[in-house]
Image: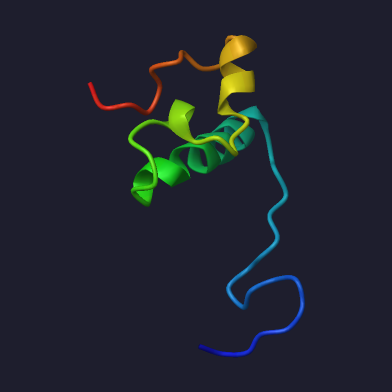
Length: 68
């Protein structure tokens, strides 16, 4: 393991959100990441997520990203 200093890891890069669709793709990625890495079986189960707020705002259905 390298002893990295500073805030960002080496593979970090900046990205400017271009439009609504780009924003939505990034939000989907962020909300699905805990499922992808096997921490939970559905985004609603990850306690550190904004997913439940987005469900309350009716942006996502509660079942989004869960196995059928």
